[in-house]
Length: 607
Image (cartoon, rainbow, N blue to C red; front, side, top):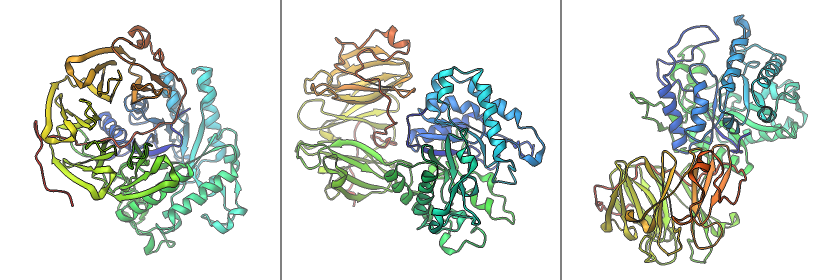
C-alpha cells in the first residue's frame, strides 16, 4: 500500500546501549527496554538524514508498537511492522503476540495504512532452530488467524490492500537448493520454488541474503546477492521480491570453515560492500533492507561461537549516546541508502537543464540535458561536504554548485567545475542555508540563511561580504521554498508554520508578508517550481497518504482555498493533480549550515 517502491529499508533494532536488550519473549527473561524517547530520536535521525524511505520493525514489544504511527506521521517514513513469536521449544503460546499485533493495527489511523507496504509475521521462525523451530504450516496458519481477526475490525478497503509475508533465509525457505547449503550460480537452473513461497498467503517474497554467511568475498558479494535476487524473480513471477536483510559486518570473527581472509569483517569492507551493492540496487530497481540501522551491543556474547560477536557490528550508524540520544554518527561514508537527485541546473549554458547526482560514497556525477547516456563523473568529494544549493552566483548564465561542510566551511564550484573551487567562508553552526534565489533581480543568485534562534539573513550574489540580517522570525515558522510567485523577476520566500499556516514574503521582504492559507499538517510542501510554464512559481504538495498536488498562481490575491476546507484534510482546491508517486528525495538534507554572527570570516582556499 506504500508509494515508496523500490523500498530502501533500514532494519531497525533500537537496543543501542550496552545495558539494553529485547524484553525476551523467547527465554521469558526481563531486560531493560529502551525508553520511547530514545527510539523516537533514532527514528528521527534516520528520517532527518534521508538515510532510508522505510523502516522495518522486528517486534511490537518494548513500546515499538508506538513507533509505527510516529514514524509515519512525524517523519514521513513508511513502516513495515513485524511480530516475533516465542520459540517452539519454549512451550509458550504465540496467540498473545498475534493478538497484540491485531490490536496495534486496529488502533492506527486508517491513513497510516497507505504507508505500510506489508506486514511480517515471524522473523526466521523456521530456519533459526534456536529462536524458532516452527514450520511453514505454522506461519501460514498465523497469517490466516491475523487476517481473520483484522477483517472484523478494519474497513474492507484497507483489508483489500493489506499484504503479508514472513522473513526467512533464501536458502531452503524461499529457494530449494537440493543438497546444497548455499547458492551456486552454475546450479541455479536446477533450483525450484518452495511451497511456502508459492503459498497464496505469502504476498511478498521477503528473503534474507547475507553473503558473508556463505563465505563469499566482499568483492563478489554484491553480484552474488543480485544473482539470488534474480533467481527469486524467476521462481516467483507476479510476486513482489524484497531482500529483507543484507549487509556486511565492520568487525567480528570469520564464519566457520568456509571463511577465509578475503571475507574479513572491517569497516572498509562494510563500505565497499554497500558502495557496490547500492549501485546494483539502483540499476536493477531492487527493494532491499539494510541490516541494520544501529550497532546493537547486546549481541556481543564474547562466547565460543563467533556469530554474535560479528552480528553486533552490522549497523551502518554508530551507537548513539547521551541523555537525549542524539549523538548518532555514520560509521562509514555510507550516509544514505539512496542515490541523491539534486536540483537541476544548466552547467554548460546550452539552455537545457542538467541533473546533478551525489552518491552515498561521495561521487558527484552530471547527466547533461538529463540524459543518463551523457553521464560524467566529475569528482569524488568527502561525505562531510554536502551540496547546499545550485545557482548562478556570478551571473554568467551557467549554474554553480554551493557546498557546505559539516565543520562550517562554504565553497562554490563555478560552472559546476571542481577545478574552479572557491572556499569563500567559514561559518557557525547556528545558521543554515534555507534557499537560493535572486531577491534583487540582478541576474545573480543570493543565498538565504536561517538561524536556529530565528534570524533570517541574505548573502547578496552569494558574497559573505554582502550579508544583511533582515528579520528575526519565530522558530515555529520554517522556510519551505524560494521562487518567483508573482512573475516580477524577484524571488519570494515561502513560509510554513508548524500549525499548518502558509505565508509569503514577496521579493524576500519581511515587510511584504502575505498570509496564504491554513493547510492540514498531513500535507507537506515537497518543492517549488513552475509546473505550467507561466513564468510563476507553483507549490508541489505531498500528503502522508501518498497524494501529490500542485497549487498554481499562489499570491496574496489568489488564495488557493478557504482555510476551513483545507483544514478538513481535503486536497488543496487549485491542485492540478491527485496522482500518487514514489517518494522522491530532492537532494541531501543540509546539516550544520552556518554563519559566524552577522558576517562570515574568510579562510584560505580549499585544496
